Length: 150
Image (cartoon, rainbow, N blue to C red; front, side):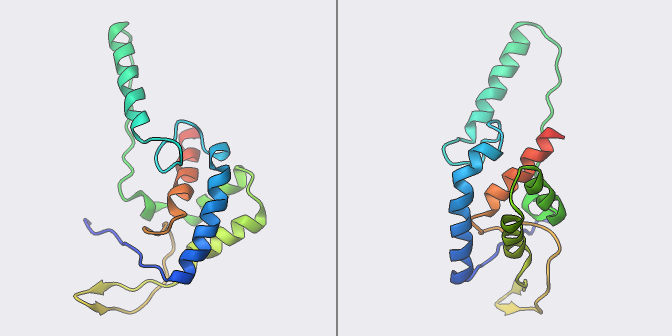
């Protein structure tokens, strides 16, 4: 349960995903809510901590009742379902061409498990985003942003 896959991607794949990442970064601020601060260029993850601290201070100082909910994204990259990612991008207004390109980059390729320098049989994955892929953080933010709306 404690192991997490880390992908080693070849150079040509990294070039394609980097080009896609650069294009996605240009519009990321318009498709991801300002409250999403992790992995967003120009935003800082600690902004969430500051907002939480200010909220708790306000609730305490005004003696208000409130509930704070913390969502734990344990192994979150591994749990992203591809149809949900596609639906999130569709709802955010991404074109069919772009969604197909992202779908191809996320779903294609095979995975092998390396233990003690021995690589096992290759197999296909059926969900998740790749650790080490430059586009994965932005795609994850799109998914997480949709969860925040729900």
